[in-house]
Image 1 (cartoon, rainbow, N blue to C red):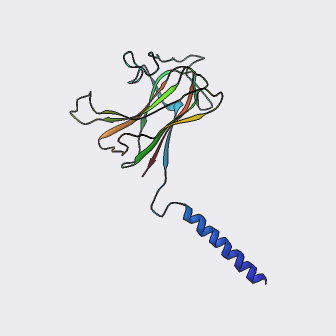
Image 2 (spheres, one colour):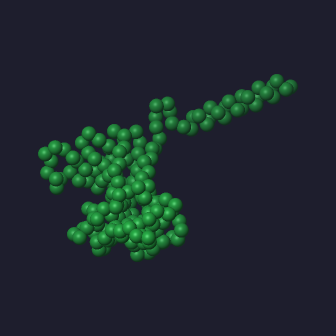
Image 3 (cartoon, rainbow, N blue to C red):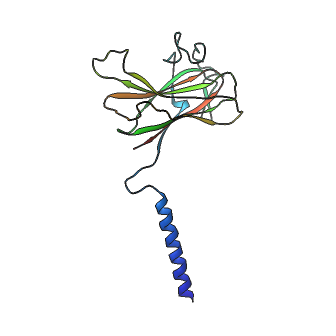
Length: 190
């Protein structure tokens, strides 16, 4: 009786293992991949395309908060008390397809939001500098929830296929005031 029980349990365990293995992607296939840029690693800039004297997503131009004992610091991974424009370089695999763009932020303020942009810039030799700029996606915080990181998504990606031979990619983040950004995430497939 004992050998039959061992064989039955072994067959059941094997069947469960085969079933679980079948839930994953097929050999050679891949599921979603993620590139996450910490907000604290983004570079502050004096102004940006979406936050300048002539173009401002926040209603008015938001100058950089500068650095002091009470502004533009890092607390447990958040960009704390910073405002203004930030940018960061992005390198994704060639021929990857971007499927979602997200910003993670603790936004406890009803008036100010954080806006994140995924940018593709053509950098071809001889190209007119006023052409070749594309906002691939824009995600922004909304509403107010205290002490909670929330993710805000944009899955309407323009020109989602990555072509590193013709384009440079970067992220622009505009903090309109009080919210605390944590990260920007790009979801893609290969």
